[in-house]
Length: 420
Ligand SMILES: Cc1cc2nc3c(=O)[nH]c(=O)nc-3n(C[C@H](O)[C@H](O)[C@H](O)COP(=O)(O)OP(=O)(O)OC[C@H]3O[C@@H](n4cnc5c(N)ncnc54)[C@H](O)[C@@H]3O)c2cc1C
Image 1 (cartoon, rainbow, N blue to C red):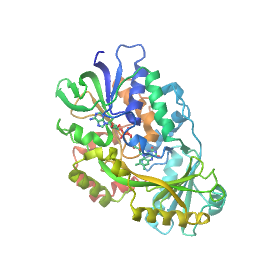
Image 2: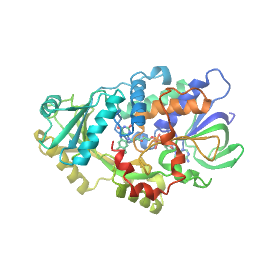
Image 3: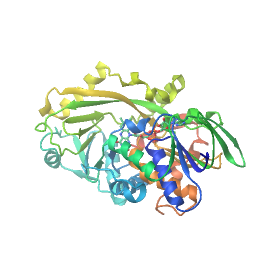
């Protein structure tokens, strides 16, 4: 088999698969093929440890605009991926602290900016929350509630299966157990050769979709790709349908720092959101430099362990928000990691030093964006007019890190502003 490709995608997570599918489809009858090089199996990284929620509200209006388009793709994937994935439109309720004036103000301005983007995200009353949760959710006078009805809930194993089917259907060459080790490059041609555990590969274009592994993988080329891991514990509890209705919207509880959702029938699934405080982001980056395992910690079976204290903490959050449940039955949990950047925004588009290298990294919130990011990266590679003329990727370019010391991000409020 020839190992010369039009485009090689490094990393077979949701973003890598989305990029490969879009480039291959947009190539049409033009010569050239697309390959994915994945060091384990498709979806082995963070793409198997997420909650499969697709929503649009985002503090960055450009990210929200992309998410809105992406939501439409998820609802009708067949034209772009050749497969369909079932979804439920569960909607989401956001809970904010009314007494935190600064936060309340930013939620109100978020509502306005989402409405400008045509995204249905609006404040609702306590009674609305009670009705939507069938009286299952405890509401408090000093809380504010927002509702986003278009939010979708998918199922992670169904997404992984669809990724496998889609790459086959679209004739993408997938090399699993194929670890990219090194690159040969020069300033004129960019990356000329990709050295892997299965020999050398050649490609006109290279997409970096290796997520949390990016820093380590490209350090040898002198590229700085700032991605670190922020640990998060995920827990499932068994609940009865009479305690919490199956139709419960996703609950994004920013008072208790917890996301909750009904999952696969009898489960209440929960985890903490990404931490936005500058000091938390800074410590994730500092921890990265002390972690000899690097991003491989994601594959480590020991990272699935549960700590008693975390479980107690989560139980407290469940019982205070869902009083009817009482003390719920623990039904398993695991650690996962958000693949964060210093400002919690994506890294997207052409590299500033290597002229055939494109980045597609998700900053801990990528699944929902996978179809639109695949389309946009394919447009860049094929130099086509963009999928949507209203999208500008400049805000997410890796060039933003060149002129700024990372610590500057942690001294400013930039990540906190990206509140969702
Ligand atoms: C608890 C939790 C819940 C989440 N819930 C949601 C959600 O509801 N909605 C949402 O949109 N997002 C969610 N996310 C975020 C989402 O999981 C990630 O942003 C997304 O999965 C990242 O996808 P990716 O393709 O960029 O990375 P990955 O899936 O990590 O893929 C990177 C791939 O690169 C491969 N690789 C690495 N190095 C090499 C190499 N040298 N050679 C070859 N291959 C290599 C890895 O094996 C891996 O498969 C959640 C995250 C967490 C932690």
